[in-house]
Image 1: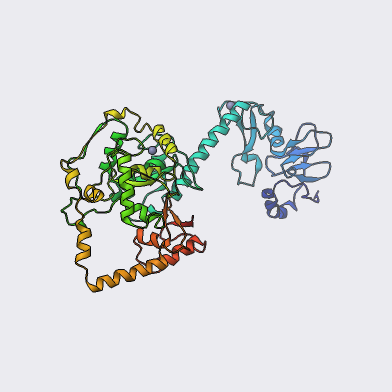
Image 2: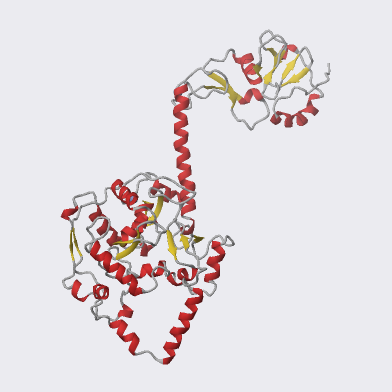
Length: 495
Ligand SMILES: [Zn+2]
Ligand SMILES: [Zn+2]
């Protein structure tokens, strides 16, 4: 007897797609009760051979509804595959469930189902679930798993974070791989100070933000040269050499209390100034605010008064001597704004402190130093050994006290007419364009690590950064006006 077949109660989409292929064979389908087995005392019959249940009342195939549940009159709902399993294999244990062996396979369901134990997703113990969707044996395990997942997420966050940080060094010559760098950073402890670091993708970095630092800057970001470093330490070491940072770190931690500088190179009064380090720390004032500090001479006087006021020592710890050696040496004296962004008051501190302090207040800076156990030892024991005749022959000290202003004398005597013209021309230009212009606006640069530098105006910034491009001034303005995102690697903002 041939039967008309309906497919109204077809289960999931997956099974729906198989209907068209089975339909042609179904034309010859004949239901014969002896080949089929009845599910309990219901009107549903299952066959091991056929891929569906047969509803004897309605004379049609069924797979269940969208969730795979069979809706039976006067019977509790049951999953299609559960009913199929139970029909041929008996009751399912409370700690087990019926599932597909291969979820992709759509033919012969009976061959494709088996039972599986309910194992807790966290403790992996056997348990009896509340419903088919329960994954954990208890609320505790559910909570614990949440924590585990959060940790996993944190790790993937670190992956995303590192991946974006090292974008520039993924390419030759460094070829950093994200997973290798993640492995180096996974403890999230600073290589230098050991504090716990925080991932910050947006906004300005904080002293405890995770950064990736090249220990020996001249070697670049090679895998063996990079370390996870907090932003504070990263800033503090800036571009100084590995040996200098190790020297400084030992002193900060009090492992070595005497700092021998006697063999260090410095510019002497009789040296050829042009080829040696001859920049004076007081020039910072003039660079940063030419309205307030119109001449270098004026800046020198202010510096000299600070030198005496601070008793020839740094302003914050009164332990580092006010001296200069070669360019960018970590102990070189530098002028630091007492309050970030405010050119009213300066203090003299060694370069590394100036770098690390950035826009922190003096108190905040000291708090950060204390957190890292830097200079928390008894500083009465600190000792610096200077080169023997430093105070007599150094260009820095002589210039500061104006004892032998050789350079100044030379300038006035040997000037040709042409040179004079040039100077007066540049003075006129400065009058119009420089910081003497009452319309000039103070500007600040923010590098990709979030470090901020201030300049009296864009022209001063161009000079300071020694930008050669004629468009530099315009590009920086465009950035500050929001027309460009960055210029010369910095974000620019008017103050
Ligand atoms: Zn559990
Ligand atoms: Zn650190």
